[in-house]
Image 1 (tube, rainbow, N blue to C red):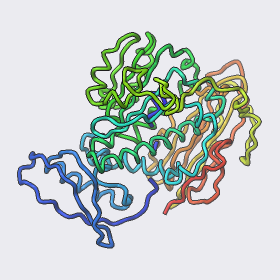
Image 2: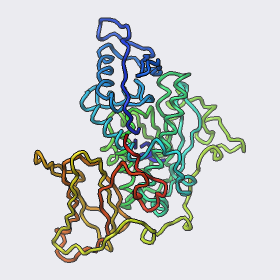
Image 3: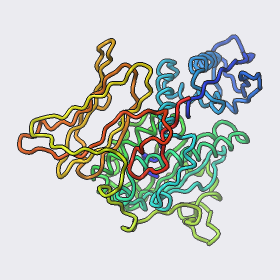
Image 4: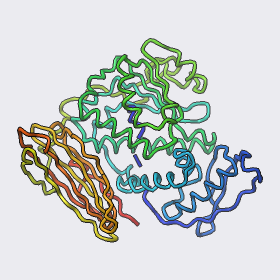
Length: 453
């Protein structure tokens, strides 16, 4: 795991809910702390789980939020789940609904409900360093990451960025499930995660490599968009001198509430121990980092309790250019000073995903997507036009689309006055209701877009 390793993403299912009014004070500022019950269409009573203290005014907002999201929620979306989105948008109903609906659609496209059926590449399972060591005094899962053992250069030669991010989602979903189970005994605070990174002697130069930097930034953005209010505390220790420069770039994509929970200590400083051990019992924390825990082999680093990471062997490297695919790739030359534009129209009532995969030979290129609403004429930037280094790694992605809208994919070489760019590409509209849909990446043999219900 990494800073962006706290990351994307619930298939929609229509379910009507009827809420019971909970007896509460007339004073809108009085704190309320309880478990709320509700009933579904079968009039079955369901407990929402432990909740933090909220005011009567916030309770009313929560009730309204559930009504507005009624068509998209499933049984697992309890009140605490909804509170996360409201808090992330400072109790702005409209903003919270927009954020949650976007995330639910993303979850459906990632097929998160079936993500445990996916068999991730060996490189991810055996070389992404992390370990769920134990729990803090409030029951929250405590994750330890010996980050200096993360070989991102090797990882990006073994898996696609899509696979990397999907694996992070898989891990976070598992952590969230564990946290929920903990909350049943310890209360709502157990539903947040405590994360510990050791940056000792980490080589930050590898993150200047464009594919690595893009992967981290993209993962951070996915985390912020799809897992709000999940982080309880993040400790980053032994940070090298250049780390502050890198973090200043990364935190632009983090919410201020998230950054307020991240504490950073430079190399050789152990003041973090006092703060960490104020809520984590040293007996359940590895001895190598100031605790008392050793694994069954007597190892103070507790390597048998985590994935330790390390340099990836070259026999796991993949040649992305040689991977077989059922996509109908096309090859072309984008002339110097020119653009290639591809137009895709989404008709009324269609549920489509605009997906792409491309690579340039020798040189980078600018890439972007804009849309025009056929009825209103409104033009939107869907993917801002910007330089992508697709000569180093395949560029892969997708966006959700809106009905009655035309999307234009742009490969822009207009700034180059000296050379044309050779481009190998596949771009298409894909139905998110199809079973056995075309793979979104060359390596995701088991990945399908979830059918909408």
